[in-house]
View 1 (cartoon, helix red, strand yellow):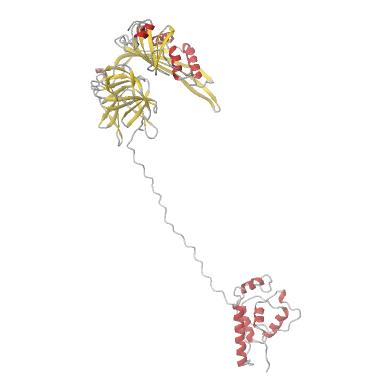
View 2 (cartoon, rainbow, N blue to C red; view 1 turned 135 degrees about the vertical axis):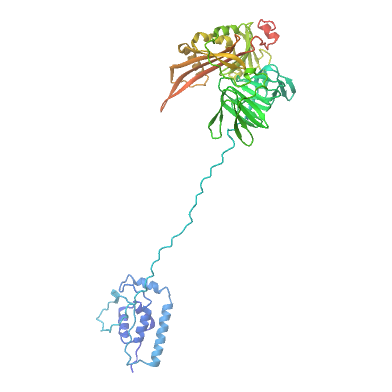
Length: 588
């Protein structure tokens, strides 16, 4: 009985993993040719080798060795255990001579062609190991389409239109106000201040905190040329708003009418904290308080208000704008009742309608009307770049006041001009800083002309005259007519006006002045049944331009001066007896 010595387990494991040396490889092959037990052990170990590993490829060997290291001791111990178990069984039962060799089942792999496996000598003929038929791979599971992710539809809400605002106009408020000078005209007025209640009968300054009232109704002249009429028992506060750059009328109780005239101007009307600014307004406006709301009714002319979107809205005649805390509204009034205003003429207590030019109407000569003013006293107001108030005396002296500086002089004597600054005595001006506002006003007042003389100087410039029409001016029925001025005669004065504006810094010197566009005209108003000149408006304009990168920037330079006359024959001088004596005049 021959005894077989099987290779050590680690030798078989190394052979199965193709790591044997050539001599060792030949010895294991010879042994496996007639040892069924070792063939089975090698087959078990070989199953752990990947089937797709190219045999004989040295490049793939490190990968097999790396995979073997995944179980560093498990494969070696398993192979050793199986070999030991097989050897023990063989020793007990002995080899079976009649049993045919059992083929070793190996995976379907290609033969090893590695140079490491090539023997140096011709190997003995070895019985080939029968391979089991290749096991077909398990059927692939049909790839299912990737599940579609169902996202909920995004619902975009439709924009809901904002509810319409109950406020029609843009509310305004005067934050910074200052005192203004007013002139009582008709009726009785009282001033209520911290000192108490006193009669208000002469021109004077009114503080923003002071209230003007009237028991039976009264009227007063505002600095911008407007006339304020108070109904009986009405209470108002007037001031100049630095915030809005216009006159403010705050109606505390009752009703008031503001006659703005024909020159467009802004006006701020209010009741306590509720107010609105009227833009470019002309004609008459009635302001009243109705159960805490502010009602502004346009009696004549036109008025423009701003809305909350930056646009504008025009008020029409007999239309009321009512401002409440909860919202605004527009209401129509068929026939406004003006009977509660005693200072309005009966014919003027309804909305005035301008009269049509008639063939029998004839305008009085302007030079005759202006010359008649020199023979009587009158008060005046000139509104232009500055606002000047004053009084003319037929004795040949007149006063002019701008802000807090007053001048008294004769028309033909500039050297004998006397000045009063604020509440100081006449000719005691105090210390004047060079270039100060008061110093500028003193120089300006020294050269200003008497108002009726300014009108007489315009008469030679008239080239044509239009037909008169009938309108109301400060509640008086007047004839109003237009006179056209000659452009050739105006050019010299307009050149001087532009030079003064450039010198004062109010205008940058134009590159071009289009003198062919120069226009000028006068609007005169006189009482229809009396030879009294009430108002003269002098308007002039010319086009000019600046050179820019994109071309010429064309603009228009305009001048407008309004001269108003009132208190014909009854105006008095507010001068002391000492000053009248210095002017060679007795008490007036």
